[in-house]
Length: 570
Image (cartoon, rainbow, N blue to C red; front, side, top):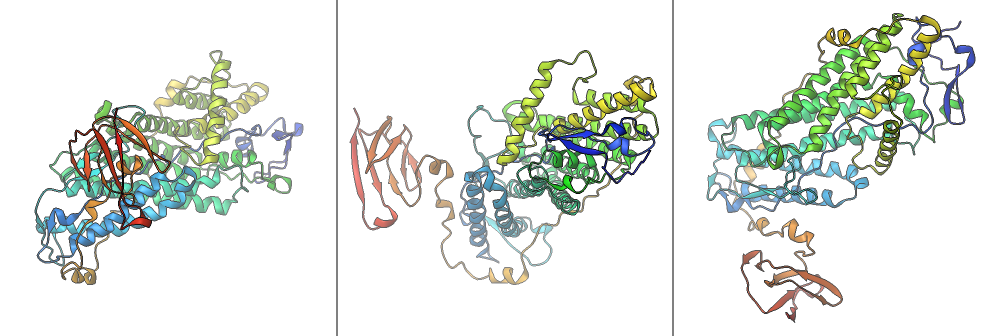
């Protein structure tokens, strides 16, 4: 019997299914081919397991000149406000884009953050002269800063509503929010790099393109892990308590461990043949099977199993650190905690699968089946060959897969299950194949899974984090900022994004007076709805008790004209 590993000749498609020719019913258990035969129905869903779909935060406007002054570099506060304004606009625009357009806009956010980071680092150096090296920067604090950031990892106090902003009164926490936004942006770039591997509306990537995508994603995940490690080290030295869980030392350490776990798992995905074959089989635009059989490479099963165990250890550490932040409004949101637990389970299940592949190659099919059952137990899934399995659970799983497929196509929050769906499908396919092989040929006893799990080795690291070095200002730029500022620093007067979300914009409103009662009226056919709030006059709030609503509007086309309308309340 032929045993050509690199040839998928005996496999062909029949009505959209990948099936096995009858002449290959009995497989040689000593060949790698028997370990990599994939039997999958058309349209089966491959769920991407990583990286986590972070949401980028937004921030309020802030003028550094209102809180700081410099004798050595008078223009530093103004320049810092300028670049921070660019970051604020980029984050605000990113939030308002549809999910399908956000992935292409992440590079703009990264550019804005990298442009602002040297200035906030210079501000921090001016406030901490002892730690300075190079050009001397002296910065004086006039009043403590008051900056608002909207957290994205903390639990929402009111479910269904947008998280409230937190007030930041320390430059250390401003740096933490800024750098964590950069790290999350790198993670989103990694997601965008991996997305073509799982899209079914485009041509399937070849091996070279697939490897390049995984290597790009790995690079950005390692950069994100290094940044989080740097922020965590800073946060552990800060004596001011964090304003929220997003920038607490434990959360920052957890995010570093999470990125490292995902990067470690990508090292396995690069050489794991199963996800690529399943994705290729379910791609309707793939025509490669007509003239070329998929090549199934040999894998170093035992090594990959230990890499998966290392990723599981990092995911477990991240989960433990996040849970240390507590529950409720002061803790981490349940979605991230659930993802960390699912990722840990997936990593251990992958390790069990590779241990099973190693056993099957050695001819121990019974032990291999036990390893697969151990993997399903790690995932919390009942085996199809178990009497406990129910039809409802399988229906629920298929429905979840179809829903995830729509998320992949729409580029929304796909892959938030930690890879449980993907790994479950692969293990079930192998389990069915090996059960058939064991029942018809080998007839080996399936040992209990408890002793197998007890003898699992420790994980093996493959990546080493490089220390993150934040960018610093060039000497020529610092020298130029010794000159006095050319204009006033008015970046703190920008309209809050909360107000913009209610329909007000800087160009449309100069003075707005709101009533203490609710009312609604129309101005030139445009509905305006006011709620009981306060008197807003150029962003200065005072309590107002009035019998009418007076609205002054200065539109871009009528800058020199003021129009007013009065609405008497009932």
